[in-house]
Length: 314
Image (cartoon, rainbow, N blue to C red):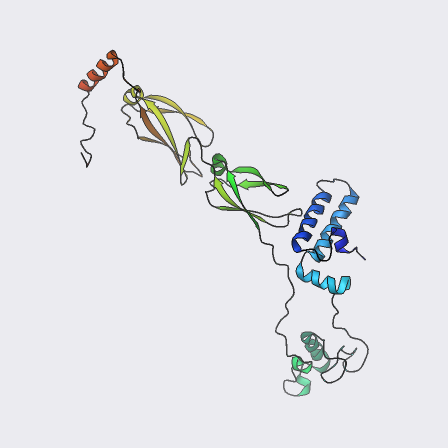
């Protein structure tokens, strides 16, 4: 006979469900085959822990064990006696024996087998549920272990990992969990990490995407501000820019590029989205020297502009 499950897990009969689960997790982790490769004693202890938790880790099974032990609750049997072959424990209503304890469905099956299912009695025959008392049961309800509620937590995911996909390690209690993040993960979404032998409950993680130093996200598109100088804006040029996928690309700035103009890098965003470069014109800070001032004034005379001509408020 197997050892007492309370003894195996090292808990008392009055232990709560959380105390039983905590003891199970600790021992399961200690004797897990991955931590004890080739250790037969640890393997046997691991299996014993699993079997013990199977008995007292479920409220219904625990109650049965506490009342009846490993033998389990008494079943309807067929001790010797009269009536149907083998007899029924409990007998018919009014026949003595302390009242019925036979499963009506089982009784009906036996009645059909030995009496002829009602046809041999004339008409439809008696209802075995009525015959053995208590009425017919429409179905059986067996205790099933309800899935444990998941552990809920919040996890911060780096911007690039959420964009490109990858794995991150997090700590839940005493356990370090490796979480796979799919590409394109969005802020506020949830990730479910399935439980295992050492952690029977699932973990439900609410994702918080960490902001990036220079990338921004609009759906599956990536936005990057690119500062350019006055000569680059006027004359054009080339600048090197990063992409969210980790590349560095050289792109052309067209002559006459205004601040706020966008350049699209097709397919360089998230899951086939695009990356947009937003050019930001930077002018020299403070006052310029006299020679520079004259050059700018001369430039303005040669290139007259009316930048607010088409503005509604102008």
